[in-house]
Length: 268
Ligand SMILES: NC(=O)c1ccc[n+]([C@@H]2O[C@H](COP(=O)([O-])OP(=O)(O)OC[C@H]3O[C@@H](n4cnc5c(N)ncnc54)[C@H](OP(=O)(O)O)[C@@H]3O)[C@@H](O)[C@H]2O)c1
Image (cartoon, rainbow, N blue to C red; front, side, top):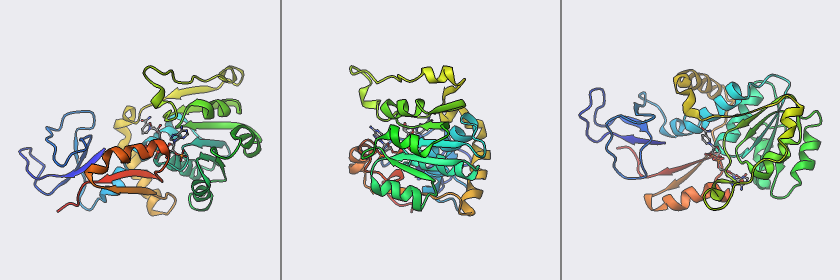
């Protein structure tokens, strides 16, 4: 997702200087006819481009629809999210908290776990790089897991499947631990899926674009929560086109803290 500024336009409704959003490339200039999945959207005057790319952009909206439409969280339930200090996971956890859930986050490292507890308002945090995730889930989810929001796949998904409770939902949002195993290496499949059968549980994948028609509703609701201080927007801003390859790799090493952004230039 990209925010850019119009330098020249032959399209009615788009004038030089307008800020626009779309799925452009990592490049200084782009040519757009407005076609494609997200087309070309003009940002309303006064919109903060950073907010439009993070909390109110793809990852924030993914968190919203994954938690509310797919996960269908209910007050009092136990909600577990992996990739919890990331752009999608942190917002998913905060939304579940707004809806009255007990929220447990799984993230890598002490600093991220500390942030989840102190800043994001999570009830518990599990450092998967230094803790036994199975034992920690048993400790922090004594009544089992009602909703598991999965951003990472692999072993962590299996640990969560082992703790499902009756009628639970597993939200398949991403599987970042497995992306580099696609191709000639094989991704690791879930082993504990029998627990879905025993618990009448549901595991459902989704793409945020499946909810395109409902974006305005989500943006309005999330803007309100943000204004009320119920949602925090943690971003990680890198600078310069030449940093593009190193920046995307940050997602895979976990060097990013919050929404990974790359700034190519300032609007004029
Ligand atoms: N379904 C959709 O429409 C949709 C839309 C957007 C994103 N997604 C998915 O949502 C997930 C999060 O994306 P994001 O853009 O918000 O990124 P992000 O969570 O901000 O960054 C990725 C995080 O993944 C964690 N990670 C990397 N390798 C890992 C591994 N082997 N095991 C466990 N954790 C690992 C790292 O955190 P730690 O430091 O905690 O390891 C890293 O910070 C991704 O799987 C992405 O593909 C799905």
